[in-house]
Image 1: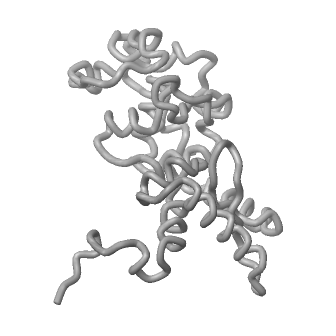
Image 2 (image 1 turned 45 degrees about the vertical axis):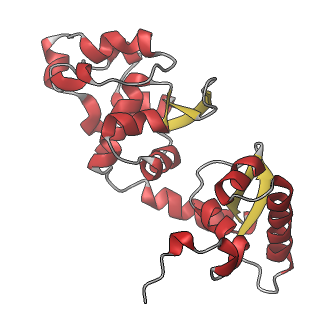
Length: 223
C-alpha cells in the first residue's frame, strides 16, 4: 500500500521534527527565523526554538564532529561549514570558479545586471525557474553580492560587483548593451515593482549604438 507522505505527521516520519528542521535548513540560502520555521512546520514558536537549540547542542556534543555547524546569525538559523575546514572549502570554491558559467548562470546574471537591485523571486519571475542555486554560484564567484533587503517583503536584494564590471570591461552600468533588440518580448513581462526599476528601464528597453547591440560582452565572463 502506498502511503501519502504529505499527510503523515512530522513526528511519525524518520527522524521526526528534528529531521524536518534539518531538511529545511539544508536548502536555506539565508538564515531562517524561528517564526518562519515554526510556521513551515506548523508548531509553536517556542517548540521550534527548543528544537534548534537541541540540534546545535547535539552537533557540538557528537563524538565525530561534523564538517558543519548550526548557528544563530542574521536574525535566524542556518547551517554553515565548520571554520576548521575553511581552507578546504575555499580551495573547492576557487577551483569551481575556473569552470565556464552555464547558460542558466549567464541568463540569471544578465537579469540581475539589468534590474538590480533585485530579489531572487523577481529573477525567478523573469526566467520562469527557481534560481536559488544559480544565485549561490554567482555569489561564490564574486560576480554578485547581497545588497540589503526589500522593504516590503524582507527578501534579500542582489546587485553586481566591481569584479563583474571589471570582467565585462565596463566603467558604468549605463554601458551595458540594450536587451530590447535581442529580447523584444521582455517589455510584455508583468513584474512586481522593485527598487531601481525606473532607473534601469532605459537599458532594458532602449537601443544603444549598433556596435553595443551587435556584441554583448557576456562572453568575456567565460574567458
